[in-house]
Image (cartoon, rainbow, N blue to C red):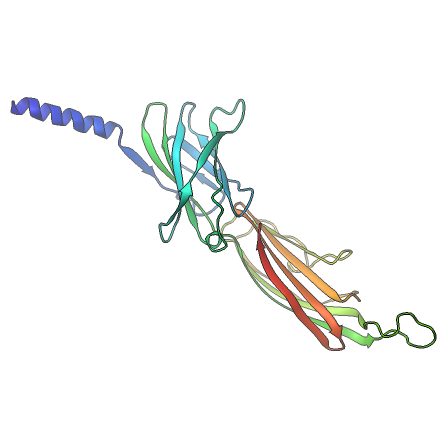
Length: 268
């Protein structure tokens, strides 16, 4: 009787071990792609369409493998944000699936590092818990200043000028920018635009960057032939998890009266 009981326990233990779930961690940090050394999944590539949602590609090591359920959670607190859904990559892509989450990340949640956790199996039935980290949106720290260059001019009020009493202007302005950007990953680039007809130079004299993780960009006393009332600069960083866009507008209200009146951030 004892031998039969031992055999039954041993058989049950072996069966349980055969289908035990193997944990496969993300060792590549918060970059767009995580490559795995073992398991059903070869790699996961983050490719989100919006900061409020999450999308990624799942590349399997062999045909017949699949992921059936999954969640997204906060890396620090462990709070679960919701379950993900799966789709196919299209005809002829037998080893590629898509995963997406449309739960609607809040303003606070897009600022946090998160983790995708998937339950997957290969064609032999082996079970895997696969983790893929993805970063918060970039953080843009931006200090700027704008001053008028030369004489502050007023409309000519002699004769029958129809513009008499209108606003004044500087024919040139001098702009200084100190820009620190932490992209949280190595797969993000940034661009900058300004008023129509002008090219931004906030990235050390350029209007765009290559891919980078963290950097500081300076621009000191750059003179623009600008006489308008509102001097606008917009910096957008394009991350695998979405975009962050920061807009600043300096308003020329009078002589030595130039103020930063608009400064806001949008998550896209």
